[in-house]
Image (cartoon, rainbow, N blue to C red):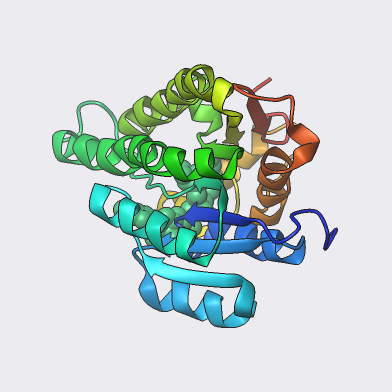
Length: 246
Ligand SMILES: NC(=O)c1ccc[n+]([C@@H]2O[C@H](COP(=O)([O-])OP(=O)(O)OC[C@H]3O[C@@H](n4cnc5c(N)ncnc54)[C@H](O)[C@@H]3O)[C@@H](O)[C@H]2O)c1
């Protein structure tokens, strides 16, 4: 931890109420930053705000709604200049292409994992431009670099996040706004509990380092991409996966 790393700068984090988003909010505050957090899990979001104190604020944010994004950015800017965004909110409902519910769940994945990231980036750019700099980090997955069986919609949207990251990085470089993607392998959060213990253990057995990652480990990498230490990086894709994507 370096309590001077973020020097009071404000970062907007979607899906911050639990999992990787919560670990990230804790780390940004521990490293001297401020977090403006949004989620659809309001009780958990407010509990985290209470835990983190004066350097954290929470506002309901459904990433599929542009009006929620614009209100979140406006509230964050009333607090102070905005320096970054982490598009962390996501869902994972593993189903194959031919599953009976695939059409409905494909649309749900696109709305949250893909349109949510698009709207988030669009909403923060004017505020980051007013700050004179900005860092955007988009959470993709190792599944956004290759594929995985039984996760058709998730795979589609995580590839989209990787592509949107590079398109935005090209467009925004002139504005001193950097955009990078992070590609975690299995991370021990509620997201993957839907798979069940036996399936998760089978997945772990395929990982060279033979364990899942932690939310805190991903938070550390995201903080690197938010910080000045990565100031020459944009359009990059970084894996954090115990070697799974090799
Ligand atoms: N856990 C993993 O193994 C893993 C691996 C690769 C990538 N990721 C990605 O990391 C990110 C965080 O995942 P996690 O593991 O912490 O999962 P999680 O389920 O613990 O947290 C996801 C958060 O997103 C929020 N969210 C869902 N829909 C939302 C919406 N419409 N608007 C706002 N917030 C919403 C949830 O309420 C939750 O707080 C996701 O984008 C996920 O796809 C996770």
